[in-house]
Amino acid sequence: MTSVVAVLFRRGVRAVHYLLSGACGHNRAVERLEFGAAVRQLRESTAPAAVGLPIGRRRVQGLRREELGELAGMSADYVRRLEQGRSHPSAGVVNAIARALRVGRAEYERLCALAGYAAADGQVPNEVGPGAMRLLERFTDTPMFVSDAAMNLVAVNSAFMALGHWELTGDPWDWNVAWRTFCDPFDGFKQSADDATDHEAILAARLKSALLRYPADGSLAALVDEMRSRSGLFDILWRTPRPVAAYESSAAFVHPDGGAVTLVGSLLAIPGDDLAALMLTAAPGSTDAARLAEIVGVVEEPTIIKVGQAGPG
Image (cartoon, rainbow, N blue to C red; front, side):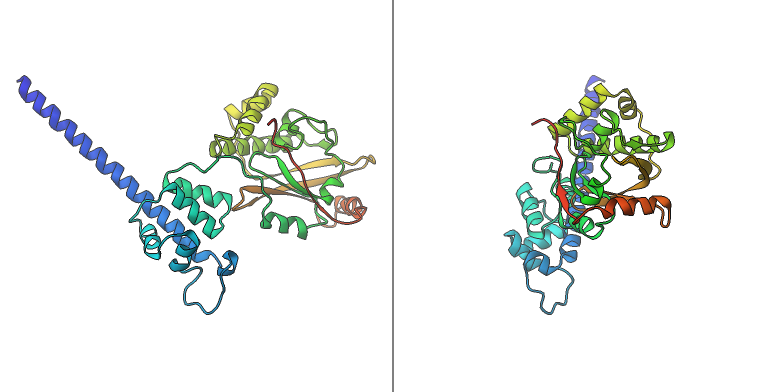
């Protein structure tokens, strides 16, 4: 009887091992297919001029496999096998493809995740890319800032600085929106209870999402730890997040001259660079719109200012 049980047990172990191996193999195959589809989509949507290639007469959209292979230092046949899910890329291959296609940080991390690798450094990107610069350059009369995933301001326009509410205190996180909201609020920034609730929920949700995407970023982890220690409200939101209905809220900005202007802040994602832009606007034809025009009108020459600090270290 014992020998029969032992035989059945060994057969069961082999069966489970077989099923698990098959499941793992299936998952790897799916990942290879998803990675290949992502590479093909990026290759076909990349303009030749964007990577330094002549445009000429083309029968295909984007880059040819031969062109991507040449830029990335691999054969066109290997690119084909990658796109068809018949080969698993090394981390070096993923990096080479990302560099060749000049993808932004978000796309690079997506390729790494699909290939089963962590991104090279896992740090929150804070480079102001061309898309963010265009927004700042083209809306010179609209107060606007660009922030990274950790809510550190990285660039502002002169219209935003003209509001006069962002005083600096010398704190390491002076330029972090979440820190200033929960731990070091501005005297010249006033919100209703409902708007404050929305604003706080947005900031907590963005920081939680950032920490999930960049677990190796020490400055981000330190910021979250310090905020949870300093702010009971933030700690509650961190443990029990509120749902975010819309990424906007209203606030009154008290100007140093004593007047106030009420503006709606709308948060816009900037794909590729993992940045976000906040635009502050007033209702057209309103008293606030006229007041905003007065405030911005005193700016002698619109400029873009790169700012921001990522905390200690």
